[in-house]
Length: 452
Image (cartoon, rainbow, N blue to C red):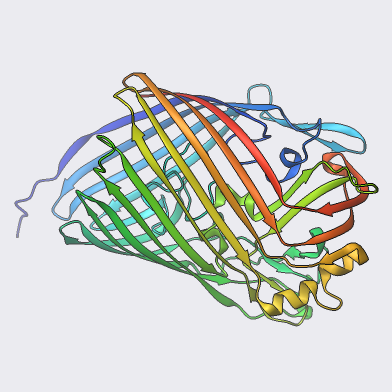
């Protein structure tokens, strides 16, 4: 009998983690933006501030084998977040974490063996910094996300000299479905209702990466299947045929720049067609369904209103998928002032475009948007863009403990013009006339974190 001469060596399991406390001002959620719901209403129902406390725990085990390292990894969080208020029937309603409830989050749970990664990990489409080129803010557009992991089956081949290629199948249900909107079903502002059906195919992701002393460069691609339910909700009403969308992206990190030790520049760009979540990532979901309000001094107009919706596709009854296209980018310059102070300037952009067939369904004669908006709408154009610019400064008085402040500006540039009748009772807005307008929001976040 042949006996392997390579021993199996178990490396002691490593337990690590962090405790974090944070408060965000001018939002109803911590670090995910204020571009929809009560957070964007700008009235008494929205929180002036929202606070959160979290414990994160990581468990990492590794065993050396003749096939390479066998690794298992788990990352979980225990979180308490103060809740928010809404309105129903004229009375306020509260949604929170309960007296001593909180929530448990399973970020990562995966096995790595012989080049394979199996389980819940960051998507292979995402850059190594995920959606944080220099920021604390969760909701940055302009590239991939899944900081909390996506289920996948992945193989990575190391080609040497820091070059690798990766192929991956990942489950799209939780994080990569932006919606396939059925215009035959009532929905917000005539954009239809999401008619997503069950999983039919995994997303197919590929990556080429070069990681060396000067920095990192990667190109990525993904194919995403759009699979809708039934036109009328039941089997005899029929359904559109599946249609594949795609995303392509690139990311670049430049290290050792002359501004200081440890400084770097990170930038990435992405284009999608029928695969919106690879640009407006899962934690930036509100930016893909924006309804932002502002004050108005125009007689007969209750509020200004900026809207922008970015599903993967739209379709009419007895019609096929019309895929929605997006492009975007994000990046940051990160600078260390000294061993205790650092700052980052970051920004992001995402533009959403509907094809001519989709615009005809939404804005043409009998289109779903113009029908709801009525004669007050002077321009109907569902295209829009989101711009974000922010800065964060961090103080690390002792190793492993950091206090940071993050300021973010978000701008919604929407293309509709004129007025429309609407009502938003769930956030305290009455039935009335609303004027389409570009809108801005701001958010300040303060965080303290101890790593161990």
